[in-house]
Image 1 (tube, helix red, strand yellow):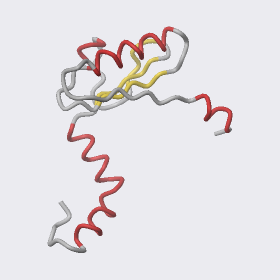
Image 2 (tube, rainbow, N blue to C red; image 1 turned 90 degrees about the horizontal axis):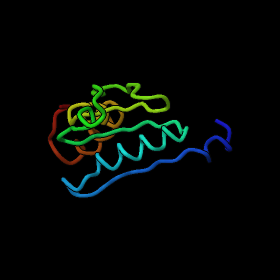
Image 3 (cartoon, one colour; image 1 turned 120 degrees about the vertical axis):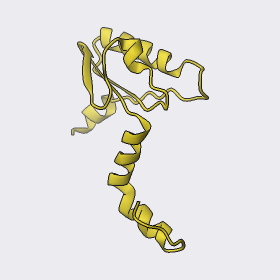
Image 4 (tube, one colour; image 1 turned 180 degrees about the vertical axis):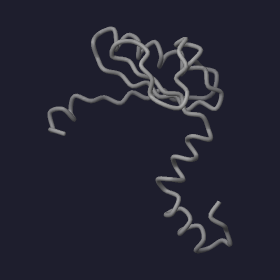
Length: 105
């Protein structure tokens, strides 16, 4: 990817304790940016998913088109754990098993 393209990318994160409106604010921001012509991928990894309900589109498990310029995906706890295991599982196992008697699970 050319440097100029990389500099045009933005990552906006909504964080905070539960129940403060992170998903609502992130969905509203994503909709506004998409409406303004920006390409947006909205990702939620909430333990109590509500993004599909807010967008009125099933976005569970894979990036799904919602509107022009907007794709969204809702990852549940199991999906996130599986992604981490695939990406970092061997390294984590090597470190932890060096000082604890653990299995591969």
